[in-house]
Amino acid sequence: MTSTRCAACKQLRRRCPSDCIFLPYFPPNNPQRFSFVHKIYGASNVGKMLQQVEEHQRADVAHSLYYEAYCRTKNPVYGCVGNISILHQEIYHLEWQLAKVEAEISLLKAQAQTEAQLAQGQQVELSPANMLADKNGVYSSLLSSFDLSTPSLY
Ligand SMILES: [Zn+2]
Image 1 (cartoon, rainbow, N blue to C red):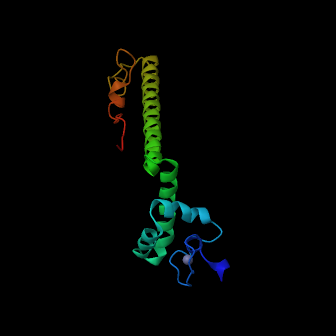
Image 2 (image 1 turned 90 degrees about the horizontal axis):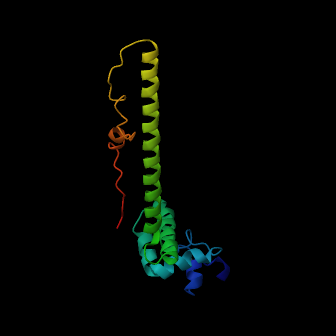
Image 3 (image 1 turned 135 degrees about the vertical axis):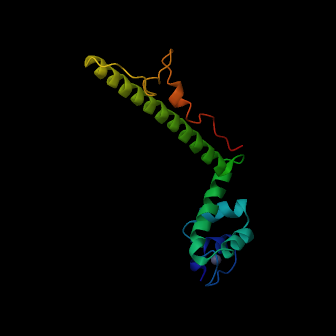
């Protein structure tokens, strides 16, 4: 009997009924998983949150509660929001790099086109791509189309 108790009932030192709400999501072989959610939310609240959703969604609820509780334990100030913020910063940085590379590609294409036209003795038309580089060689017109402000969750 005691060997089939879920991690929650084991930790709370109570009998685990066959229809225990925790049993499918907090198996006895992973007591840490329940410890995190119990510490942050309390067993009663976790049980209520599981009961509030359809049965097919409960595994996701248990997993997200575990993840949030785990992050909150590791980072008491920001919790998983800290991870989200770090990932937002990475996305912002990569988008900025991508915009820069795309601007460089556009500039090189425009330069190659201009050189090809000059080699053929054609008159060079001023297209927006030809005007990308300003006097300082900064690709300001293309880069300005991207929002380079730093995202913040706080
Ligand atoms: Zn149980």
